[in-house]
Image 1: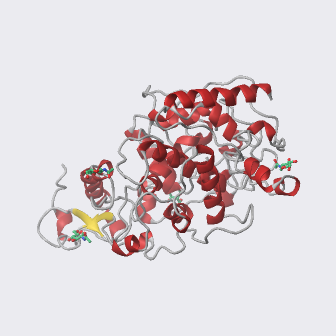
Image 2: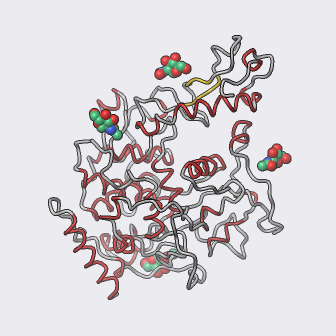
Image 3: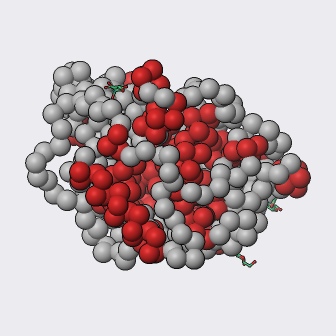
Length: 455
Ligand SMILES: *[C@@H]1O[C@H](CO)[C@@H](O)[C@H](O)[C@H]1NC(C)=O
Ligand SMILES: *[C@@H]1O[C@H](CO)[C@@H](O)[C@H](O)[C@H]1NC(C)=O
Ligand SMILES: *[C@@H]1O[C@H](CO)[C@@H](O)[C@H](O)[C@H]1NC(C)=O
Ligand SMILES: *[C@@H]1O[C@H](CO)[C@@H](O)[C@H](O)[C@H]1NC(C)=O
């Protein structure tokens, strides 16, 4: 109790000094971690010592660290890690969050933001509010019983402090794991039952992101290739683990997540559980822009959406991106799961950070006239059907349907992603020559008789 109180006071001081022109203090009426009922804790808790989260690349601090402190993290997520609280020995801690954020210098910072709806200071905080809001729905404790014993306001102040609770899909006792080691330590996710495999194996997906066939020898959890949801916003399926693995490689971190998907929860150098979720939040997967870019206003919604007010830095379409949920907000508290939970959590975190939520209507994607996958643009690189019969090497061009190799149309995606297009085009050409059958072509297709233009 005393420790927590000291923590809060530190927060007030640090933050007040930081932004003198836009004073920021935690809003009155948002309680504090110490005043919430103690949660049920699963298992025996974190070890007394362990390898600490580190960054092998020693990336510089993110701007986020200048305003979002460990005291705030600990006040916001007292029940993280299946009830035990933030711990640097386990997947969720300020240290892990901080290191992960260093890989996304635009997250929770004022870099690359030029919307004029909110001040840079507000954009920074709204970005974190949105990420945390989705984490509440995905892996929060979501303890309804708080509303039975506490006032609505007190209950909400504890309910929305329930983030980063679960590690594995299925909760603290995951039905995908061996019932004798059901998820009370991060290593419990090393193998799973067949239901936890989440392996998608179309010819194209198996070529780029093959599922592991390794087995564990434990009949209660025989499979090692287990791509069920893990981490704060639950990345799942081999193609997401595989894309994250590729991204890590581009950052000089070599890790075989397709063979060992549970490294997402156990690796600490760097810590991956938060990083994987931030990666998903920060990365567009055409036709979906990044959730971050929507909250920042770095997206193009088209004339019809603009006319209806769905443009600029809004929250609503982020729920469409993460889980295709547009049910709107329930009237009561805590209301049901899904989009309602995401909206209410966003409002709570915005209140805590003292930033505007935006107008009620655009908090939901319910009335957005043109959904993201209906906004017409080119989405992926594909073999060039208009030229592959010609007497010339095969090529890849942007196509209007989705695929595994993204094309980032400059009108719809930030320049940093558009810059990847040429690399992606080459990756596509390489794959056409390496495995033509997955594109439905073979040596009878003229272009394949010409040497790859990349050699
Ligand atoms: C939910 O909150 C109640 C207090 O209202 C507490 O007794 C219980 O342990 C909590 N449940 C979990 C799973 O933390
Ligand atoms: C797993 O087994 C399937 C079917 O036997 C095979 O097609 C696939 O190549 C194997 N995957 C790996 C990564 O070895
Ligand atoms: C910010 O505005 C400038 C000038 O209009 C533009 O060139 C740039 O692409 C914008 N940045 C983002 C991330 O939208
Ligand atoms: C999509 O890309 C093709 C080239 O493959 C181009 O001809 C077409 O204009 C593009 N469509 C859009 C909507 O940009």
